[in-house]
Image (cartoon, rainbow, N blue to C red; front, side):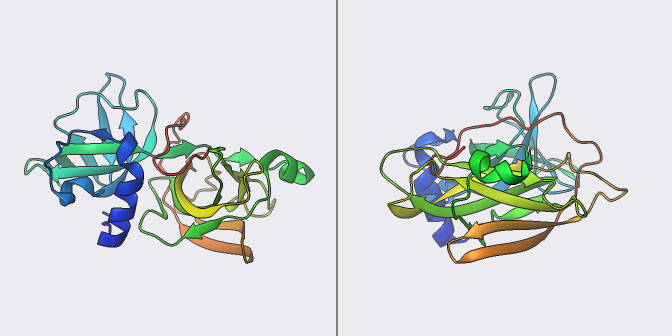
Length: 243
C-alpha cells in the first residue's frame, strides 16, 4: 500500500474535493478526507467491482454494490476503512470516498508526425507516492504551466519509439497553446498491460519526456497482468483539466 504524507494529502484533497464520489458528511475528520491509497477499480460482469491495491492485494468494498465509474476500469484515489473480515490476499473495506484518475491507453509513435499530433510542450514528472508503476499501470503526478482559459491539455504515452526496446516509452504533452500562467499539477494513468510480453511479465520500462530543463528519462519496474484487459477507458480527472 502507498500511504500519503500530510502535506501532499492536503494538496490532493484540496484539488479533488469538488468532484469526488463521497460518502462523507461535513463533520468528518481530516483523516477521512485524505486519500488512503491508489487503486485500480475493476468492474465485474454482474455490476459489482473490486479494487486492486497492488500487484497481489484485492480490496472488496462492503458498502458499494456497483462502481461509481460504470464499466470503466480506471485508476483512482480512495479513502477506506478496514473491515476485519477477509483473506490474506482479499481485504474487505468500507469506502468513505473514491475519485477516478484520467486513465488512458498508450498510442503508437507516428515518427516525424509526433510533434504535430501529440505535441512537444514541456512537462515535469513529480516524484511522489502516486508516481508509480503497479498492476500493469503507470500512474504519474505531472506538473506544467496552466493558463486561466480552462483549456484541457493532452498527455499521450507513445510506444514503438525504439524498435530495439518495446519497453521504452515517451510521454508527450500538448498544451493546446495554453503556455502562460502558473504551475499546477494533474494526475494521469496509462494501462500498459498490452505491452509485448516476450516471456517477461515483469519488465523494466524506460520513460522519456521533455521537461522544462531539457530531456529526461526514468526507469520503472512494473508487473504486468497475466492477461491484458480489453481496454482502460477514460474517466474524469480530479486535478487540472487534462486529456
